[in-house]
Amino acid sequence: MISNNTQNYRNNMKVLFLGWEFPPQSIGGLGTHSYNIVKALSEKGVIVTVILPFKEHTKIKGVKFLTFESQLSSGMYTLSNKKRGDKDEAKMLYKDVLSEVEEYKNRALELSNKADFDVIHANDWVTGRAAIEIKKRTGKKLIVTIHSTEYDRTAGKPWNKIVEEEKALIDNADIIVTVSRRLKEEIISLYKADEKKISVVYNAINKEKFKGIKKNSKQKIVLYVGRLSVQKGIDNLIKAFKIVSEKYEDVLLYIIGEGSELPNLINLSIKLGLADKVIFLGRVPDQEMEVFYSIANIFVMPSVSEPFGIVALEAIASNVPTIVSTQSGVSEIIKNTFKVDFWDTEQMADLILGVLNYDQIDKELSKNAYKELDNITWEKAAEKFITLYNE
Image 1 (cartoon, rainbow, N blue to C red):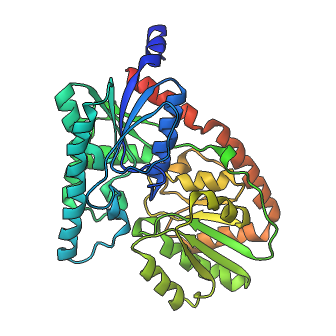
Image 2: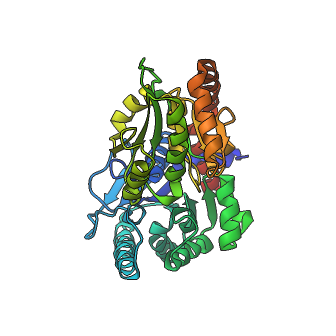
Image 3: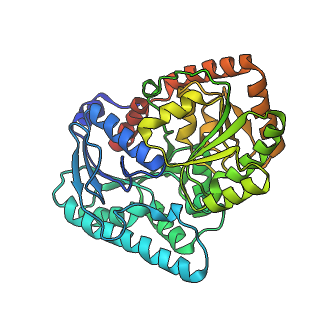
């Protein structure tokens, strides 16, 4: 509970926000989170300065942006979209991304001299070096949001150097925020993080952005949105879809996203005789996503390991019946959705068929899940961060 004195102080709170993704430079939930939480904090009266490794970004009224152009790949977190192959390739990828992280640290140190701030707020390991150095130089407190771990992103086959970077950031943080309880338990187990320093602040949704306008179509559509990586479990969705397609001739699986697993997923679709039924659409601009949600009969997020999963909230906000893996953080806060273990392709197929077969399930599930979003807002997430800043 915030005291009156703290309540008054929050209006003068100044935060240095270290970002790595920010719309339109986004490849995942980190960019969505960064934009929405910065916007909500600013609307609450917090004075936010954001450091980004690229010039092009969405502006927010009242927020100061300090930017530079990365010499490598515009500061984008390229690792998650590249295949980790042989040792020589791995060394090159290491060199590239760690060079970007070092460049970010050096430039952020320079730019932070132009900022007035009370608290440093870092996001994931890629901003860790910068956060630790700024803390050492200024003596300011450091709050860190962990959105995922190297163990999540690699499906349990981490690069040790990045594990070291993550641990250093966690150890140097005064307060650690995770986007789910499952992620909190993970960093306690893997990184021996101090449980007393950890708070959970779930991601959220602006449900008004997704109108939920459904278009009548004879074509049945199963939808997936997200990165095409091993972590996301899309191969299991395709295997489940094979079972579904044997029951429904007119059903299609739309897969939206980019990533290193694309060739493997295409080959799997061909192998299963689904070349004409699994449609790979690549990356779709945010402003066009509403169209795909509007024609989907069901949305599936089959992740092997998912610290949260904002796309599931987007589907729910679009009145699309949603299936999520029990290994996802979003499953902790939404009751009215189907949940399945990522590996259980038969159960996944049964759930998809259940929604396709019974319109009443579709309508009831969507209606009840949509109501739950009233309590899952960026405004409420910002309030929790403000409380932590004031601590």
